[in-house]
Length: 437
Image (cartoon, rainbow, N blue to C red; front, side, top):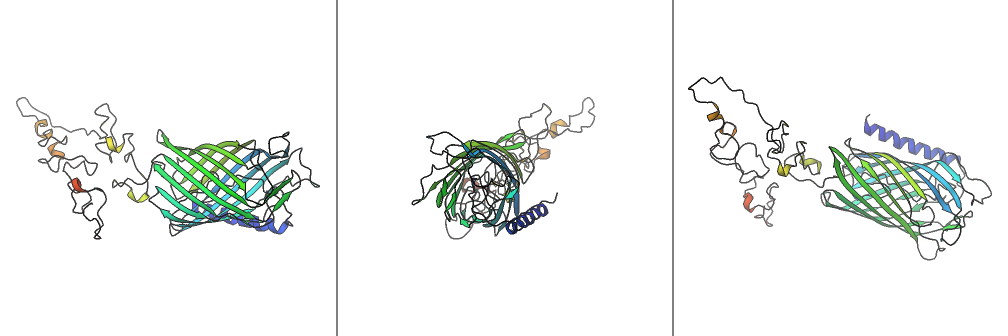
């Protein structure tokens, strides 16, 4: 599969479907009871907007399916019987985005409602459309203001909803939701994302269920814990989200929801997510249960093992490589971090391949060739025959440790490693603290 063509085709299909649906319907007023709104961006996950963007002109996209039950109730303050207005709803969100200049992103999310079932509490004059329909399309521009080498990002996103849906899938009016995004990666295995924004739209009313909506304060908190199972990267992802009505609106119980799942990234660039959750309140759109499944592609990697470690191994991808040679021995304990261990029962814990020597036949009384081949004058563990500096011991600092020579200045910036605060990163001579390396 040629991924960029696939994503481009997905975008064209989404736009065509939206245009067709927009022409076919009369924009009846409705209320979008779907609180779960996944973002289309390269670093977005579940319904949380990420703060990072992809590389210039890179594409991201995919789809996310969610099925929710007990989506809208007649009684939302918890004082009466719980009767469903919307018994269940299934939605597929088609997601596409493109990044520009490593800091700007433009995304499109098109929800396609593949099934909605009204409950016993529905009291409308006409039954809602239970067939497939398009919801309100979301256009999501985003700009990253601060990006500290994938350890922290601060961004501003402005999701805008276009009136392409109806009934339970749209408001029949334009809405805008400026959002501040903070993305933190304080450790190699942990990511936390915070969204705070406001949703501004025309007031909307759904007679069935006595639901009146207007302006809202929106929020979201995303968490991601990454780990390896063998050589397969997984992440546990979670998202808390909700909204509060702003002043001068009818009182409504605020909808809060939690969704968690497992994400697999075994194929570079791709992420497969399976999760479930439920509403934490009876607020509109906070369901009794929700199941989600999604497949996404992004040239951006959220670095499940942390930001780049600058060890002269794939340093241009921006992500840490804690086991360069993938032999199961972390680089910090691996004497040969770029050469995989030969698992043969001989020094299997040192991380180095074990070479088999082709020795000549030794006759009685002759000196053994091993005497010269195993000599190690500088006692650094590298025999003279393989030691480029047999009279100087290797310093084993994780930089060219296989050649047997000490490296007094790894980055070649003129500041010796003993005095260099960044021994693997060359000093930038600019008149400011040029002696710290």
